[in-house]
Amino acid sequence: MASAPPIPADPRPHLVDCCIDGSACTACGHVAARRHDRCERCLGSTTPKSFGPSGTVWSSTTVHLRIGDIAPPFVLAYVDIDCGPRVLARIVDAIEVPAGGVVRIVGNDHGDLLVEAVAS
Ligand SMILES: [Zn+2]
Image 1 (cartoon, rainbow, N blue to C red):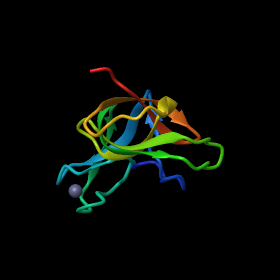
Image 2: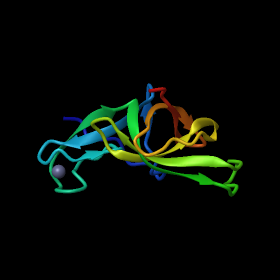
Image 3: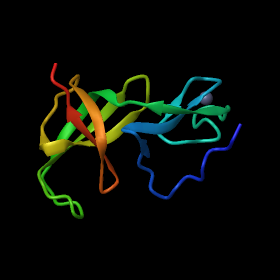
């Protein structure tokens, strides 16, 4: 099995076709939003795995401060990606999505994962 690529300094998830390029542990099933050679939880072997693009908001908040080039207000959310890890994402157009709301990965901006609300 090929080893995972080196972990870049930027800890945010890397996207391939709007899905997270992550890994899953072959021993305990732990999933990660990054490629790892070893499981973060049990140090078992991992296999590359793609997660997304859909997920469910676990929690969200509106930010009213400028962060770098990102003008306020914007909405950050922790999203439980379907069958995948929980990741931090920014919701496009600062639309508030309550916990339990369904979102979909649409890309990234300034390295941040971007999601949009999915009509239910
Ligand atoms: Zn594990």
